Image 1 (cartoon, rainbow, N blue to C red):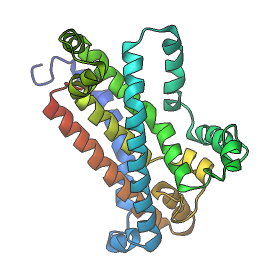
Image 2: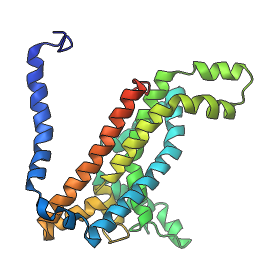
Image 3: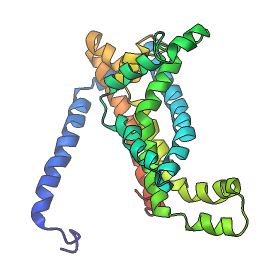
Image 4: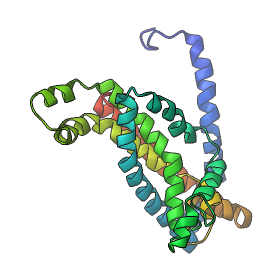
Length: 266
């Protein structure tokens, strides 16, 4: 009982089945890889171009998520306004929304004939089917991950330290930079990593809103989908590469959480 943490022994059976269900497909992909030609498959020109574009757009969308998500998370965590409570489900809706629906929504918002896009197009600014569209699609699906992670951290940390700093005469902006952000740093790091990982694997919204133009909008998931039709070995090799990158992100996040001792609230 001590070694199992006080859990009944039977609970390990469904836990093991769940673990096998998750791990088995990954093992199957690894077994299917043509390891003798693996390096050549993942270093083709189109693959490297897609990988580089994925990292650039994922980094850009993560920066955008941080810039928008930190204020959003703090408002959700600290404000009791009725409008904020009503807005919260809408803000977190992309967590459960099918990505292709998100792509269609973005297209009708920022496309050439979209709600806002028609005015941007009149000003000579075209967003749909561009690299900017990739960043916006990734931000749309990733932003809720950062918001919900940081909101939990903000609720756990509370506002006591900010109140003390304010009573000592610190201005709100000073409290923000010197007290609030350092307290939320672990949660912010977790949210940013999750947003980056989600952006890196985004497919549906990107394909719908940005298309698949090599070097412009074709990220690694889109390249894998394309290669699946023309070169199955390349598709499998690139899938393993994407899994490896995601695993590095997850392991890095887990190690950081262990070192932080759970301060982030996750």
